[in-house]
Each structure stands twice: as structure tokens, then as C-alpha cells.
Amino acid sequence: MRYISTRGGIQPIHFKDAVMMGLATDGGLLLPETYPHVSPDQLESWRSLSYPELAFQVIAPFVDDISEDTLKELINRSYATFTHPQVTPVVHRDGVYILELFHGVTLAFKDVALQFLGNLFEHILGERGERLNIVGATSGDTGSAAIHGVRGKKGITIFILHPHGKTSPVQALQMTTVTDANVHNIAVRGTFDDCQDMVKALFNDLDFKAEYSLGAVNSINWARVLAQVTYYFWAWLRVTDSGTATVSFSVPTGNFGDIFAGYVAKRMGLPIEKLLLATNENNILTRFINQGDYSLTGVVSTVSPSMDIQVASNFERYLYHLFQEQPDRVRAAFAELREKGSISFSADEMQQVRAEFCSASVNQVETLETIDSFYRETGYLLDPHTAVGVKAAQDLLPADSARVCLATAHPAKFGEAVEKATGNPPPVPAALAALEGLPSRCSLMDADLAGIRDFIIRNIG
Image 1 (spheres, rainbow, N blue to C red):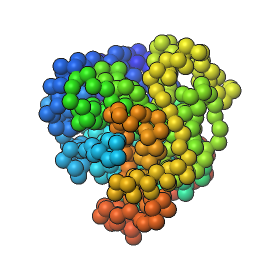
Image 2: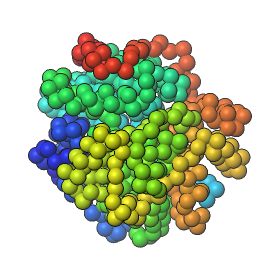
Image 3: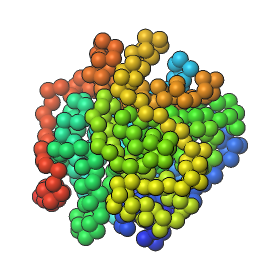
């Protein structure tokens, strides 16, 4: 299995090089040349597997340069950190299945990928005798999960940019109370898109990237998406009883990475009826699917801050396939976005989009009402992001179908929103309660690329 860029400017590379490259050197995103196919019989044979065993079966066909024994060891070590024996259990409440992705070290779905990616980085660096300086942007959960994935690991220094005052208090504490010498938190006076734009600019400066050995943990890194593919197969195996039964997934997303993992699973042969993309008021992806309108607007702060994004970095991966895998069409689309602030699509392209996805935008009032009503009716607490997905599923997916909603974070990570919705604060897990009063370290900076660049150079490992 080799990897190519959505913009067509690199020669095919192997898996470990794709992990280390992160963003392709031509500014595009990396994708496998082909997707392995899983037959119904093969799918049925996976029903009795543990989560790590299933992860190996899903991931191994994409990995051509790590031995099976080593890959199994990396996977097993990654999921041994989770507190639930099933890693991502599925529960059934009020006609929907909830896929709980929050049993990792930071209580968010990003742990599923970033525990694996941290171990991958350490393995490859040790093998090559190299160092890596990770630079990433976060709207909240990626940062803490990435930090906890690489804290204290040999050969790695990490710099995480987050929008100052625009993450939840718990998300900020999970990042800034990690004071390991190889961890640097930067609070940026601006939005998540400001943070992401500066990170992309650093990676697009190829001389700087090479000189300072930059690596990516954002979902621009293919290994992030690959690790997330597993839990779509896991959930399907939990809620079906035959190899041809279809399932629909409701995915709260801002960056398109989590739902793109579902798209990959479908291309591999997983019987997915519909991928429902759920957004909050920052609804560029919903406008794209429902109206063919991919135009930039301002970012609105909401009670689901991890989705407060306009420019979805993983969207380019899907566009590559939508545009019949023509890199020149991808390049032209992003040139159009830079020049006009929008991308235009043909009627045939939009027909294909709507055959694969549906979408709904859920506002803050609806989000809070869903948290409250779902809790009153089932006794189950949703975090605001998961509530967006549940509300969208209730509105758009048939009640008599298998509806799986991705629960992307523990409700205690967004305690203020949950308390506003229900009148009571959520129970706080011991891991979060222990953050209060811990020493913290964070640098507050302007959204200035030159200043961020200088900070990285001064603090590099």
C-alpha cells in the first residue's frame, strides 16, 4: 500500500513516510492509492474479535512497512490505556445506538487515534534515530489528546495552538496542566481557523518544515483517519446480525475527519446506508451538502466549541474522490476558495454528494433541549456535540432503522452546557476532578505567524 497526494505533486510513498510527512509536501493531503475490500464473509468472521484484534484487521492492509508483530504490539499498547474493556462500547437508548468514544485518557474520541499515533511516532523515530517537532491546532479535544499521546515520549516535542478562551474550561485544563518538558501550549488571541491557518502555513514552508523536522497530529495526518475507521466496523458488528444489514451513522463534525473515516469504511465494503453529517451554527458543510454552497462565513461561538470551524481540513480528501481523483481539479477548487471565498460544484457532483451524505444543522437552543429531553426520557447524559448528532439523527434518519450516533466526548468535559440544559452539573470523573489546582503552563500569543514561528524555534527540542 502506497500513498499519494490529493494535489498530485509527490511520488507514491510508503506508510511510515506518510505518517511522518503529515501534510503532503505539495500542500495536499495523503490518501492510499487504493482501498482494501472487506467481503461479507470476512466481515462476519470478525464478530468475535476484541477491539484491538479488530483494529489490527482493519489497519494492517494499509501498512506495508511495519511487521505484523510490531503493529499488533503498537495497537495493543494504544488501547490498553482505555478504561472500558470494549474500548468504544455501544449502548441503546430511545431508538438510537450511542457509540461511546470517550473512554480514553482525555475522555474524547480523539484518544482513539492519538494514542495510536503517539506510539507510531515513537516507534518510527526510534527506528530511524530521528527527532520530531509536532505542531498542531485544536478547537479543544485534539490538543489534549495529542499532548497525552506524546507526553514524555522520546524524540518528540509538541506545540499545540488553541483559540484563547474559546475551548471549554476542562479542555483548557487538560492541555495546560501537562507540564512535561516536551509539551508547549500556545493560547492564540483569535479563532480556531486562525490557529489552523498558521499551522498549515508552517507546513507549507517546506524549508522550515524540513529544517525543524515538523510533524502533524491534526487529522491532516492519514494515521489519524485510519485509526478512526475501526470503530465504524466495531459499531456495525455490535448492532447487526447479518453481513448485509445496513446501518446509518450520525457524526457531529466540524473538520470532516471523523465522517471521512466512515466514508473510508464504506468504500472498504462496510454496509453503511447513510452518513449523516451534523453541524452546529458553523454549518458550511451542511450548506454544502444541502444547497451546494461551500462559502466561507464568520465563526460563531457555541456550546459545542469543538465544531466551531469553517474551513474543514479533511474536506479535501473527499473532494479528491468527488472530482474523480483528478488532482488538477482539486488544485483549481482551492485556488477558487482563496480567490472567491467559495467553491462551485456541478449538478452531477452534488447528486453524488447527496447519494452518500445527508446533513442537518442543529442550533444551540435545540442542542440544549436535546440534552435535557434525552436525559429526562432515558437517564443518559449527552455532551453538546453528541446532542447535535442525536438531534440530527432523530430528525433525518428513519426511526425503524439502525441509527448509530457517535458520542465524541464525556459530558463532564462540557459541564457548563450540560448544567445549563438540565439544571444540574454532570458527575465529574476522578480524572477531571484531579485537574483542579494542578500547576499549569501556557503562552498567550497574538495570531501572528512570525511570532509563532519564533516561539517554536526558541523552544524546539
